Length: 165
Length: 175
Image (cartoon, rainbow over all chains, first blue to last red; front, top):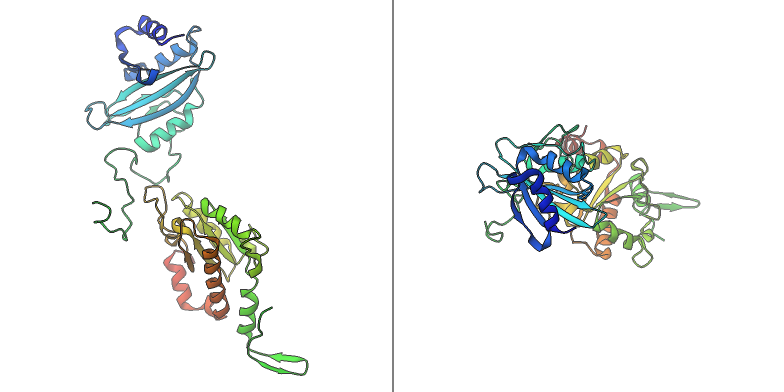
């Protein structure tokens, strides 16, 4: 199973909707439209010649410069039989970051989506229990977005000159 | 062995003031509660080992039940989610109780100036002694522990019922 084979099978099924094909360090990467993420993952899961049945990682990246699609949700899928990995990116606008949940397909997506919600504010539609997992429940901002400052603002003992502010 | 406090000795009796005796007894038998979270906890393990023995100061028995302990030693990074839990443990301790913040993270958040780390446990519980260091050497912790012993020795028996102490607890939201 090579990257070309996977790319062929995917373009056969989904055609031009999958864009930005790339292979950084040999890991096949592509971008799918927001509404198709579950369909693509289900196809990769069910198709016996592809067999991507392990969701390794689910996370997000905030690109403030890509207006209209700032939040990228990144899925890493793995084929345990042939030892092949795949990366799928899905972009969502920060004004309405709704993405379909993968927790129906992969149980590990449950907590990983809660973490992504906690840190980036991505709303996973259909998630059974979407609430903060690692941060304090009362937090009302999303820490990993780029507009959030790096340091805690309540420290009064730090010398601004030495810390380059 | 410790020196006896000043008092009046006679044939078969020894008279001294109560708080001296109580202070002496308490200071040499402090039972700590090691609230070890991260790296400072490992240093505490080294401290309890035979090389830098803490049990020679009377802390042979460390307890993990707050009801039975005198000294809450908070060792390690406390996240904001862990703050209420430290407070809960502190509230469950019986008077008289003391708190020792070991390490930079427990004293002030340490190098972790971020959204998830509590910048010092003195935001949730009143602290008696801070031991700086990352991690502090066991000798430094012993120094802090000896300062706690001084505090215990010199504490007045009425302190825990005094108004000043009540005000201190109220400033932390503890009744």
